[in-house]
Image 1 (cartoon, one colour):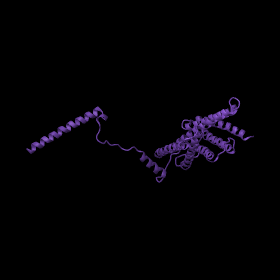
Image 2: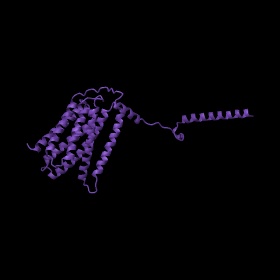
Image 3: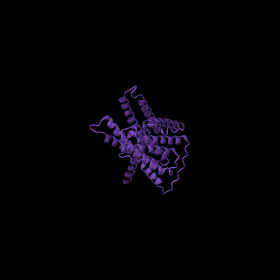
Image 4: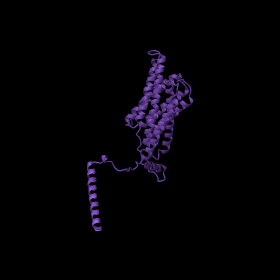
Length: 300
């Protein structure tokens, strides 16, 4: 069997496994919580179906050139959407993993947003040039963003491996399963973008990549098909760095107090408040005048 035939069979298997993973996401009522992962799988299914369709109709219903151009934009636009949805999935995983520690959760999510925004700006800035064509810009921008996304994903996977026990989770939890699958995706994509320079679609690496994707989808199916163990109540010692940093983050996250400088403008007070202040002022004025009269009489 040729390499092309093997890759076509693996693509069909990937589509079937993706549909199965979406089914179990919906059945386990996790599709709303992991909506970005559900969308990512939907994008992969759509791109795979379009690719297979173009492969069948190329040279028959449409020319080979038109089929290639269509597949080119479908592939890279789909790849870009997968990168964006992968980042959103990482964001949701971190929020779920750090739910017991609200201070660290808020601080980490803020840092994550800044890192994602800076990575996007840098990727677009590197891709822009005076004579860059649309196709070159699309390839460069998506590749740079994918590399940044892979770094964030692998960093999060390392963090989850160390923090999963203190956060009351286990290696059978869906947070770990989804992180593991995204880590495999990111590793393969980073290897391809950094070291694989062949323009052919039918290479040994593409075969290995397709096998890794199918294995990852099978892992996700297993995690969402089986009941998830309940999260344990976390008990952190007073010397735990998680507890200390959470306390610091909560303190830093509190809103500061506000004071009035230069008095209050009457417009922000209610009519009843203005009336109370007017009566208090009249009473204070009358009392002051009475004290002045008494003082004058005593002096006389």
